[in-house]
Image 1: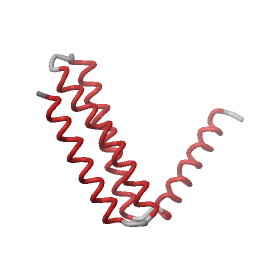
Image 2: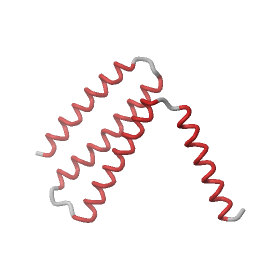
Image 3: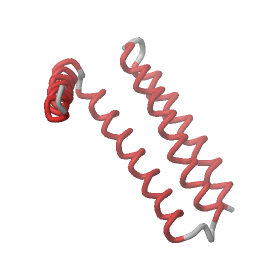
Image 4: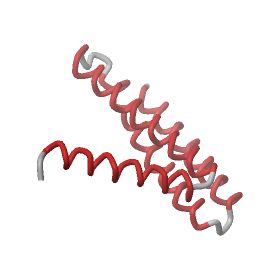
Length: 111
């Protein structure tokens, strides 16, 4: 198989995967997935800034980066709970409480 043929095959798999995702996922799941992508982008930008500019306020960098990691973990947990559709209100309540707790810890770590 030539490299061009394998690239076309990978594009076809990607297109079919995206079409199936759009068809199968509900609106809540898509919104949560977009928020997850935003969290990842924010974490990557913070890491690049730290690598390029420097780490002078190191506690601030650690707080921001661990905030992204914590929010990602909590949001993945919310996505898993929303996909099971057992009790959506309870899932959002737990997510909100855990996010507030995470932000409290992050703000205290900053100083």
